[in-house]
Amino acid sequence: MTDKPLRFHWSLSQAGDNFRASRDFNELKGLFSLQAQLELCLKAEENGIDSMLMAIGYTRPDPLLLTVALGKKTKRIKFLVAVRSGLITPAYFVQQINTASTLIGDRIYINVVKGHTPSELKYYGDFEEKFERNERTKEFVTVCNAFWKRDKPVNYKGKYYQVENGIIETPYNSKRGRPEVYISGNSEDAVELVSEQGDCLWRFPDAPETLKPKIEKVISSGKEAGLLTSIIARETQEEAEQVAKDLLNNFTKSTKDNHKSYNNRFDSQGFKEILDSAFTANSNWITPNLWNGAVPYMGAPAIALVGSYEAIAKALLTYKKIGVTQFLFIGWPDILEIEHFGKGVLPLVRKMETQKEFESTIV
Image 1 (cartoon, one colour):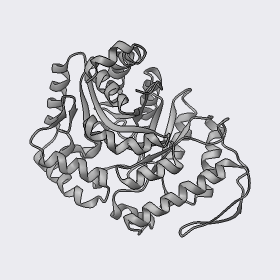
Image 2: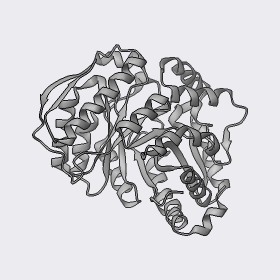
Image 3: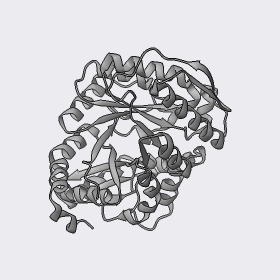
Image 4: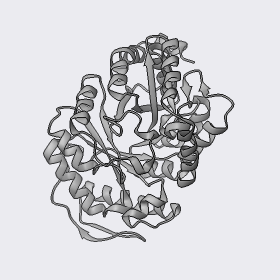
């Protein structure tokens, strides 16, 4: 098990709308209450959260503009800003990120996503198929990193991007010289990209023994692996499972039918794997604490760690033993779940990380 302390992040994607993910896409609004989002950021600062995920898409505000707005009203929380290669050139993206870092400091990470819904990508003029998006994303991150190195003019000639004697005079505001780069995806392409150009891979969770061989290449390359998962943590296992059960009372059969049809919209391997498993599995429990019962109603990111504070802490340390070092959470509602995590789970995690005898109790 690595000596590096676990890092925890939280999604801002449903602040002010607890069950946003269950709604029909046509009902989703592109801007939430700024106050609700600020309150969630401040609560995250109080409870040991490293950064907030700033998601991207047509039903959301621009993630970088929102980051600057929230960054000016917060002190410590960082922002994990999503970007798709089809929306912007790498040179201009680097200029934007570097400028934002001068406004709010070294508080920006990059979350590189390739897009999972072809019909939505076409809204932005992106008609590339999945393979082409993967290749374009590799070029995008390669060029961004070349600009962040700042050791010479950038010259690059690829299929999707060409740069001649490129220079960005606004530097990134940190000693490191660039933001950390996260790559999202369950595919081998994502593994290769983070191994070559990124810092950490985001993927959906699975049973530790199933997940371990899927992240070994990332770990062996010296990069990190992180899990995107929802969370329900309470004082006892029984209470947590009851909260999970009660959660399903918010949904109807039509919600489930909608998400079953949504699966046909995606071309993401990770989304399809989680959704297919949730709709066909005999049990909603993948492990004693990994639950996919809400996935048919709220999509793949609703796969959740459910349990007592101690059980969740042990589950996180079990993942740490196989090489996972970061987690990105979603909760229902987030502002309450952050408190349960910060006050109940996080102190146990930190205690377990420093006491070797706990390792023998982690299964």
